[in-house]
Length: 289
Image (tube, rainbow, N blue to C red; front, side):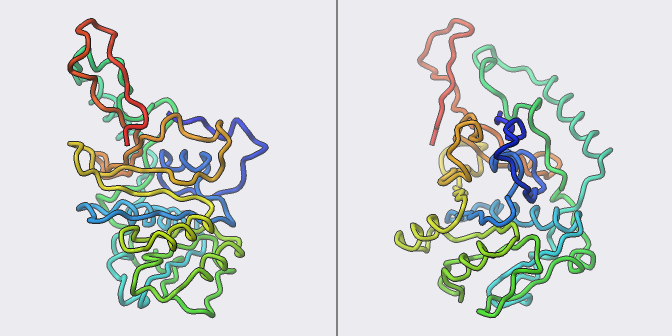
């Protein structure tokens, strides 16, 4: 599905995994590079599952697993986002993950697909992508999580230097007290940083400035018309414009698989029903949104 950045060692830098390998591959295959800022623009109205929030939770859970010092910045401090810390995903043991991957493979082999869909790429290229190491079907112990994650509200005196991972929720929303100085401070620290922003309630001028300041921007867009696709990922600004680091297609969607693990897949529209009826003649649709 994606070109692996590891083949281009000169550009590869140390990065913090998001806990979802298929999402990491969008970010030069490493995850979020240290000393950089990833902006996730949230769509509105939100779907039943807030995928920007799930990515942040997986990112923090990976930090806890690696015993890295993390910081969660929310408006109003730990009293406002108590539910966030209570819903971090559980880590899947390696045996469970391998068993689940085998179940996925067996399930796929049992599917009977009409000939006119055989030439379409089906989900993720399994030879180059792994499922997430975390499952939202369970919960990480909040006691363990709080050993490595500090939760606070924004203040001008906030020091980011002790942290390896920083997550900021709701930047740019009307009730968020921080301004663009926050992004500048994050870029000056050595942490891997992820910011969510409600795209629907931020004016164009502010959105443009945010995109300019952040190193990578991904818009999380709710699917309004495509059945069985809940959420699209639109790469507004990649970490690099070098072609070898970009995904094969920018038509992507994100979902939870049957084990409640985050999974990024390429999106293809079905073949044109008005096309030819000869086998092997169907075509894929690139850049579908």
